[in-house]
Length: 223
Image 1 (cartoon, one colour):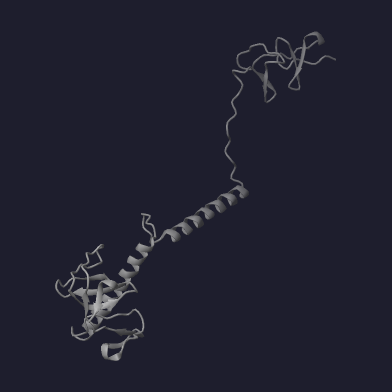
Image 2 (cartoon, helix red, strand yellow):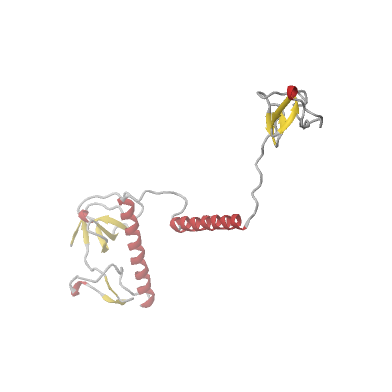
């Protein structure tokens, strides 16, 4: 028994039969679904078991993903991971500001010195307020005192041994401040209230100008 044409529902005889897309067609009925152009086995394109020409072949589009329980779980997990990464980056960069500054040895020295000077000023103001403004000129909280007792004034503060050097220093060279936290002086100037910062730097006040700041230790000598 001869099959029916998928297009016109008439009997298809063997001499005019086209077997394609799991269906039978008359040669004349095997045409594009849109423009009705007659097709053959070389130029047709099938979509959902229907023939189309190249120009009218349906364009496939992306479909939305169903919100299945598994997809919702993956979406929530991805969101949580993003929040964790954001918090990690925030904690890592907290306090750094928005500018990137190279942590050079010179910047580390300046930062350390500024912290020490702030600490010194804090203890100086504390002692002055505690003693009614009659405290010693400068107080250090940089460690336990190793100086002779005849040259020191000391007391306990926050379980830290504090001391003030009574020595006077005299400049043996001229020095011009290179940074804002340094102080300039001339050969022969008297340096008072001297506080040792590290092996190469001190903090003191120039008697002639009254200015205070850091100064190189090898530019002065003890009196």
